Every structure is written in C-alpha cells, then in structure tokens.
Length: 282
Image 1 (spheres, one colour):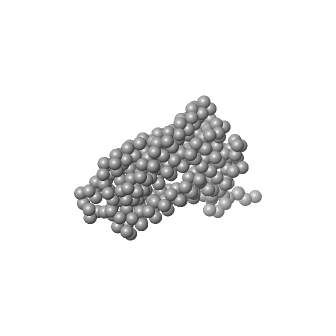
Image 2 (cartoon, one colour; image 1 turned 90 degrees about the vertical axis):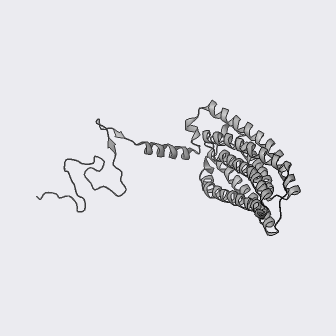
Image 3 (cartoon, helix red, strand yellow; image 1 turned 90 degrees about the horizontal axis):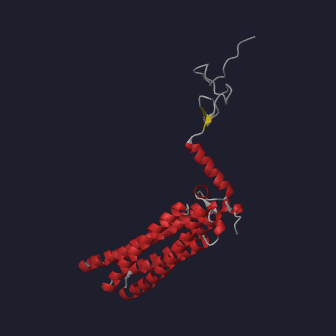
C-alpha cells in the first residue's frame, strides 16, 4: 500500500490546517473561506449580511425602507410625501405660468426652459402622488419602478422641447429683454425650487424612493434655472456681446434632463420587469 499524495496543483502549506468546509479538498475557484470564532461558529461579514438582506428584499418585491421603518413611521412619511407633492404642484404651477409669460414677453430661452421644467415638476409631483396614493404600497418596489419609468419618459419629452426652443433662439440670435419682472420671477423661482428639492431629497432618502429623489432633482434643476435666468439677464445687461448665454443655459439644462431621463429608463425598466410578479398591493 502506498501513501496517498496530495493532488497536483493543490499545495498544502501546513498539514495541520485544513479547511473544514473543503475537508482537505482543493479550494474551488471563487470559494470564499468562512471565518470561525473560537467556539467554531461561522462569522458572517457585514457585507455578506447586507447582500443577503438586499437579496431578501428584492425577492419579496419590497424596498429597503421596509426593513428600517416601522409601519406607523412609514405611513407618517408617506403622508408627508403627499403633502409636499400637493404643495409642489400648486407652487410650480404658478411659477410655470409666470415663467411662460416672461418667456413670451421678454424672449428668454432660459425662462422658457424653466417654465417647461416647472411644468415637468408638476407632472413629476403628480406621479409621486400616484406612487403614494395606496397606503399598502408604501414599500412596493414594482410601483416605485413604474413611477420612475414614467418619470424617465416625461423627462425625455420635456428635454426635447427645451432643446428645440433654446437651439431656435440661438440660431435666430434672439436677444432677451431685461426688467424687474424677470428679476422677481427668477429670485422667487430659484429659492422656492431649491427648498422643495431639499425636502424631497430628505423624504426620498428615508423612504428609499427613487421617484421622490427624481422629483427633488427636477426641483433642483428648476432652482438652478431660476437663478440662471437672473445671471444671464444681468450679464446681458452689462455686456450685450454675451447674448448667447441665455440660450446656452437652456441647451445645457435640456441635455441634463435628457441624460437623467435616459438613465432612469436604463436603470428602472429591467427592475420593473423583475418585480412585476411581486406586486400584491393593487
């Protein structure tokens, strides 16, 4: 009888140390050894725990907020999201009308862009209202992903309109007119939209809602556009040679909204398909 030799390409550096899981066999590719305590109990890393929690949540069609919020807390934040959405609809609708008026009267491409963004903010807030209209679906991943897909489509359509108007104004060298009305609309729009964006971001983080975060992003873009109207108008007042700044701002905002809309569709359409079998709240 001959002594058994270890298999080739399977070196054993210390014969006294043998992986209990492998029972002395060669380690398979991609195998992660399990760390044990002094009592022999396996120790699972935080990363492994997070992966298992995420897999479990995805397997049930629920968002991560379902593991962190108690039922009454989730419902409280849901109601806050609804109130913020209603307030956002009312405010941005007024701003949209005012900005469209400024755009027509003062030939401002950035004002037109902000008016369209404010209209988009109204639509995105309506989508968030639908998202949280069902109390039982506060943690529904499928409902969340549907809302994000719709938001992505709306973003893309709005960006096309903003880009078209801005490019047309640049091609025709349309010069903006500056007055106190434009200044007032810019300041009020910028401050209001930034405040709404911060509140939506906070609620979206707590509820792990991409739809709320997207709505907040849209409000933030609106705030930036509001201030950009002011900046481009002041620059044009002091230097008429920089007439194109207003149109270029509209183009930039349109491209940002377009990119975000495309990213939403790319990220959310596969997830919506994966979770469609788990929708149990309708």
